[in-house]
Image 1: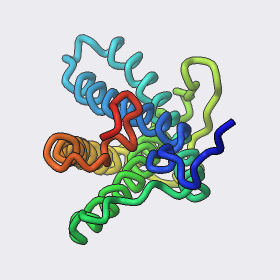
Image 2: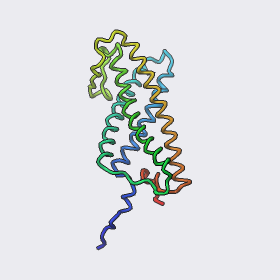
Image 3: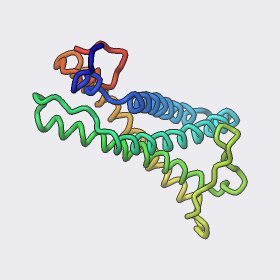
Image 4: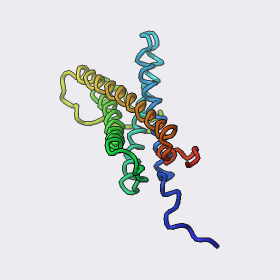
Length: 199
């Protein structure tokens, strides 16, 4: 019977929970951005379809928010694999900064969406049910505000800017991952992609 090595090859990968949350949040976030741009571009005649899509958009947004908190909690308790020693210091700093930026947007953008719904003049008449089943409360900070429509519009502008920033960061992140895989061949992408063979 053989004994396990002191440092397992698996130690150079993220944990299965971190990997699962990473890819699930990534797919949901990309879908949310695409869906948001889609229903915003619908004509006035498609208001019924837009309404249904917005209800799903709200549900998936809250799901991303909760999953991001779960990912952050897991990250704080589980050290990620180290970056390659040969990786330049500025690239390591950029990678860490990008990850922090993702956490900020993955929390801030859904919170912004929640605030839009909560500040809307329709907040009292249009309740939120996650996937049509679970009741979800509105944020309690907007009582007594006179121009709720204007406030909701301003928050929506910030929400859209955040979504566009996230899209740009996703493109940058994917490009960096491809560089590590195809050019550097340093195992960085494989540490988060279990479907790729380790180098």
